Length: 226
Ligand SMILES: NC(=O)c1ccc[n+]([C@@H]2O[C@H](COP(=O)([O-])OP(=O)(O)OC[C@H]3O[C@@H](n4cnc5c(N)ncnc54)[C@H](OP(=O)(O)O)[C@@H]3O)[C@@H](O)[C@H]2O)c1
Image (cartoon, rainbow, N blue to C red; front, side):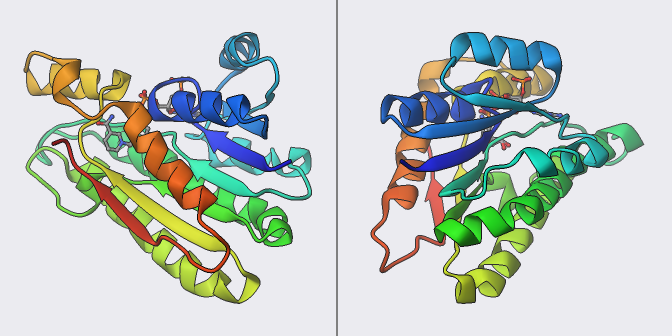
């Protein structure tokens, strides 16, 4: 049975992915930001193992080291945060929290999981963003975190090739989740979920990368609303 570690499984893309993997009968290790959120996740997904780590706190991420399985077929970094604003107004906290959750935590968690991923010749998936390819006005901190996430993925892919580890970056456009609702609020726009990508479609792409036969790797996948 395959074992997967998924962050951000409490909402949006990560939540749909966790449900789909459990439906397939696969083993799941999830990371919740707090004991309260871990309680919610255990109630929703009783078959999953839930660890607690606030991804905004690198020390808390380091602390999960002893609780990880010996082999991981995949690690999917789906957690993320966004806070829009012009550089003229963005606070130090807004910069630090987006860089911590969207970039530093995936790097630290990947390092901790690497022995287990190598053991299973597994796949690391980074859920990036269209903002990881182009930075628009108002998106500087989020885009910087996602540009950095792309750099992390590209270096990791080259480093880990000799260990048989696959690294995939998925770049979704606007997807109908709680995060997109917040983005609309911050942009002062009305939100219509039907205008945007269904998170299940992004999950289809992630599963396609995970299920790829052993002879190939999907390096980068861009998904845009139609
Ligand atoms: N939605 C879009 O339009 C869109 C587009 C492109 C890329 N993305 C990317 O897709 C990924 C998933 O986003 P989504 O739209 O599914 O967002 P979402 O519905 O807001 O879910 C984000 C998840 O990340 C978790 N998270 C946030 N901060 C955390 C922290 N400090 N510690 C632990 N967990 C934390 C949240 O935990 P809680 O459940 O506890 O809140 C939640 O489960 C993100 O990386 C995002 O940047 C989204």
